[in-house]
Image (cartoon, rainbow, N blue to C red; front, side, top):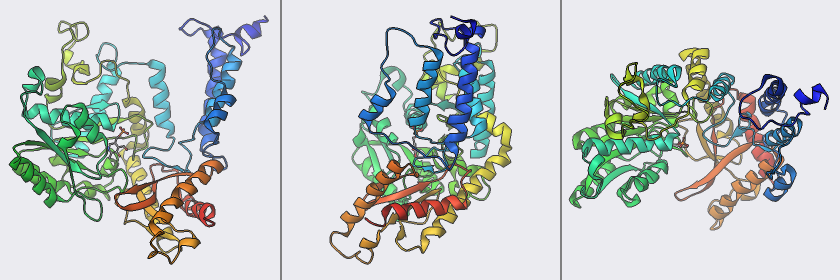
Length: 499
Ligand SMILES: Cc1ncc(COP(=O)(O)O)c(C=O)c1O
């Protein structure tokens, strides 16, 4: 083997885990180049497809991901990685408006890369000194934007887990004995959230032993916001039944409609009833960065805890999710297990910086650096501009389709969700026909199939309550512009007009 083969891409991959400059440097540089060219620039280029759709069996054949007894060369491994990039959905592409995450933020990506190279675990200051104090800085800034005068908080592995922290803490505060004696003696505990709240609330009720039936789903109004009178009725009925209400989870930006529950009015109810108020601002929390739009979350400072996902509206890379509470020390009281092998109290530094024991996890990824890198790079003003741009584009798209033939808004947008139906010409003027709802229900899935197969764009659809399938455009990527908004409407028309 020539010396070029030994150290170049023709070299077999090494079996040792550590990097070796002569053996790995060419491979790492080539991989970085591939990432930058194919996974960053080509993947976000409007001239390229959002997805190269392949049926599952064909994809298995094309990629041949079978694992083997023997290793392969760097060149062969790179070819596989090229395939991984090629057939993956380009979620950073401006035409990917399919989910509550999207975009490719260069600073966030670099923060993610640095995190991955350092591979820390943020449980003790000893192994994660920088990330520990960086978390404090970011959490303090977010808590002050929420309006808490004192706070505690943590980075959770997603908004679902952050919501579970809310339920856990609410129950612990009311029944601290639960930590030792468990749930058996507590009676029937009941939590409340709206019918349009995220399903993670149901999962939390299932996981924490409440039972899904003891999460009462409160009605919403026409705009998808929690009906506060119905909330009061539900609480009263629960008490009459001899059960114990303890938590209301209000949503600031519901998943489908983007509705903001009236936090102030809900806080009044919680205050009167002595209930914990958790605000699930996983999706809509980003609006707090904008003086123009933060009024949507008026009253959030009165909550006991908040979920806020920077990986959604603020477009940080996944996952980046924050749980905040105004109750100092409660997270540790509720969750600590004081493992003596990790959280030794006789360490040589102030062990209050060993933050790990307030989490439910042991080892924990440092999700803070990517968001800190973005925030530092752009400043709070930059984040504000990002949010304002998203809301402007939301308005632009809404106006683009408002009077356009065939398009019909489900409701006026509150967050950056625009929910709408597309009626192909064959259905126009037929709203009174008996079969109309079913026929309309079939339209969005067919258009979606076509858009994925052509790779033109990705937007999601869903039914809600009695509404037939409708499209939901969601914006988090501030690269999108007015031309893109027109493109989305045009594409839906092109793909759907013959249905
Ligand atoms: C309102 C709301 N809360 C919580 C979540 C859960 O967040 P995650 O996907 O990070 O678990 C979502 C996800 O879309 C959401 O829309």
